[in-house]
Image (cartoon, rainbow over the protein chains, first blue to last red):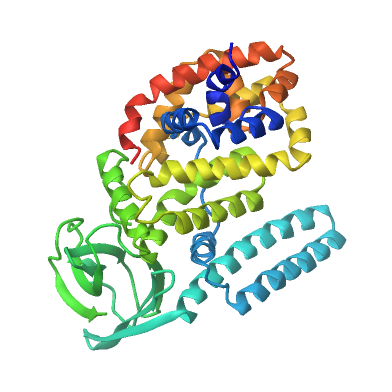
Length: 241
Length: 201
């Protein structure tokens, strides 16, 4: 057995990172000068590439996707959000402390409320960040059934997400409101909204994964059975970026 | 989100290819789309290994930063985004595991049943619409085909980040036996997952 045979024999263990640290360092140093072993490790890496997907997915906490995008892009987190998290944590601690004094059962209840409050705080931070960072605000007035309402879009150029606000609209008669992205390749469905919009409704949305470049947005009144395909109903608003 | 109900077959591959080229061209929106697509899976990998939500999130953030920095037009043709992200995430998680002692205490508390259960969690049908779930099920099927002993060794090596010596200590078996089990298991998995290779862009 030659010295090189040892590396050949252990290439799978190196790729899977099961070698002990000293052996791993030895192998790593060998790779720097051995093209054959480097190719073999790359081949094994490719063959086992999907194996980590054996772990079940975990739903990200509210706001995490935004933080990931900002971190990856090297965008500094706004100062107010850096303070908001410690303040939220401090508020949580105060609540938890109060719960401790009130007894175990009360503490357990408050801990649940704290967790819920933290999630809500994170969600609000996420929503507000999109509005604060909005590079463009688009607005359309909608007159319908004697009511004056509108559609407002806060477009965040950094995270490429929109906060969309719909307000002052009557309940959709025999249908529902459908938000659309106007894309280079055609109209792509966004969120659908039902019910009374006399109180403002707001949602945050990412860009569609198909349809090409987003050029604008539209709002239509769609029949209840129109679940796919192009718009069929009356167009209420049409906004171009 | 439009298109999320589709399976991960060629449509996912094509989407990933489009994202890869756009990321190489420094398209920030493409990175945001990739974050939406891949984060649950990367968090799953990191969390399974680290058992700590905050650390898992940090690892995933570092993985995305790595890919944003390293994917260029010159490298875009040779790397699949998702496999690359999975690999970076797993390696970062292992680095963290090996730098802390808490992991040892966690492993000391693992029973053989828990080792078995952690990789072979049942596939939840209500999650089947999530992009990538079909692939997750295929990996599970390949893991289920292993013997119980091989699967436990893979679990500890691949999803807990243990070295062969640590696995031998954890399972109380000779180092040579661990090497044999892992070698056989990885050989089987490489064959079983070979048809997935076409999706590695």
